[in-house]
Length: 241
Image (cartoon, rainbow, N blue to C red; front, side, top):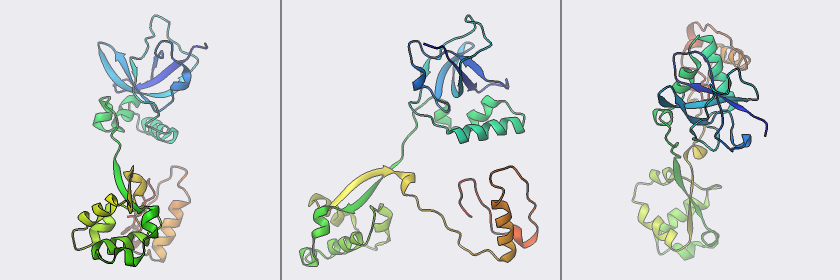
């Protein structure tokens, strides 16, 4: 098997990456940039991030150590994230390991598992979709919930029902027990609606916005003066606030 080496960013004042060996008898295919690893560093162990995988190293075999543990099956950071953090470290002349460490929440820096946030979604089952008004008219609140769910194209979160001014949980639970409504779990961010701006920019603001959008793929500074700098900003996630 062709030898390979892991280039790892570790939180340290030294502005460099550190070469490590993979765990003995493991294939290169299980490693990828953006994964966290647990590695020996001096007399301690530290959480690091794989930045790249190389077939070359300047270290001697005696200087190389294998990592202790591969903490993630899939990368936590994308290639785009890695490029951005590498750029930040270079631009601000800051130790690359510290830059990557600051990009992670505290628990992830400590080597803990990322917590996956899930939310319940509700939808009419095939049986529920076949119900008529006559089938549910004896239970007015179930009828209202049935009508509300029937109007939805995709499964909905609980916040749809929170707009009701009565306790919707018991009748909804009853509908689930009858097999009329199904519950599924989904990642919380999958169902987050896009945030739309609550205003329309004027002509001067729109001109400034268009100019900024034309340069989103490169680093460029803009000076906004007067009315064009009020009430509008565009975040890296694409949200307008």
